[in-house]
Length: 61
Image (cartoon, helix red, strand yellow):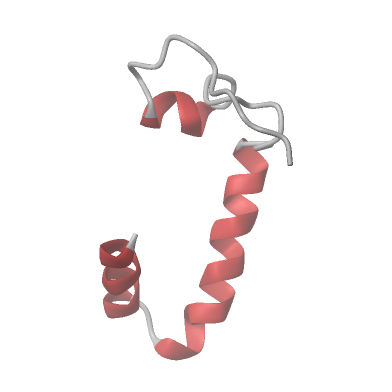
């Protein structure tokens, strides 16, 4: 994650960082509900975790 942040800061102007941050969040929300996805449902999680066969188990607080 630190390397990704470093790369993004190198690629984008500082005045665009806040807008870019929000755009990345909105993009993620468009394609993954996060709640109820369990790593198998959305296109983002299924591409990142191609080898996953079972859903992610989460612990409730």
